[in-house]
Length: 190
Length: 204
Image 1 (cartoon, rainbow over the protein chains, first blue to last red):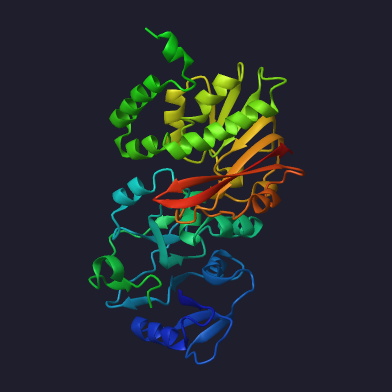
Image 2: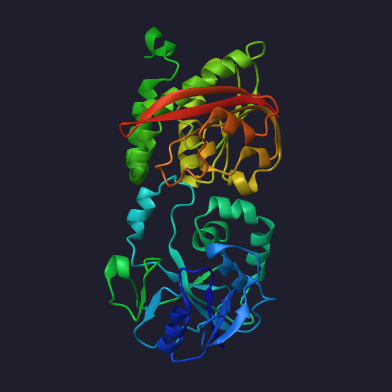
């Protein structure tokens, strides 16, 4: 099993990758267009997408072949947890730090605004079915990027039966419930 | 008893009272959303469209097949269409299944299609195509369809769900897929602010 992260553009510098590797206490592979300053193995970022849509490369079984766990750069790992729990489909975090009932109520009939999954940490192995989602994304890329705010809403709404969720994990969102979790998500705040 | 005056209402207000009570009872989380579906802005937008539709189709108002894309509950449009067209066959299309379940409860004579217009709409060939929610979805020009089209959009960007607002009727026309559309613009107010609604009409 390998650990992965993804760095594109200039918002998150090499320190974020190096810190993530230190927090994990394990080697990480960074998928990036700019390996400058990174103290880890790197893979060139394909020019398939832009911005946060770059994360879709993780669904390309030809590109990322073996088992792995992916971590966003805007997270803090406080306690060591085994995040490698592969399943039939890509495994996402469930956003139970949000009042999902309230979110459901305020997004009634709002196109694709509701989202209960989060890809800040995701995992897979060689049996995880990822390619169908990647192929669909490539085929309808323009419409998808126009319609959805990110890959979480895209996958939840277009592939509602083709993702799995972590059970009993202690994740907190800095925005919603502070730093109480084993992992704290900053969700673009830093 | 339905009095003569009640019969003359283009939209039967007494039915809305019943419908709202039903929604409150069976789908309480939808009450606010449902009530908003017959707000002043909604009535204005839909009646504006239907007035133009009547002019466009005046020579033949009988047995038209009408597809309403992004239909929501069809609260206003369905009764207005049934008021101006004779024996219309109305199809509602929306990705939100619960709104269609309610729509079917309110208008049992319609056909509903729970699909996402942007991704899943099969190529339709019909008499009339209506989409008053173009600001919510991908440009219509890239979604294949054939028929007399009535599209509306607006420049109200404060709503997160409005992913495709436009700033002029000309800009809207360019993404409509209609070769020589008729263009219309009107004003509306929302949250004490002034906005514009655009309409394009034409054959595809």
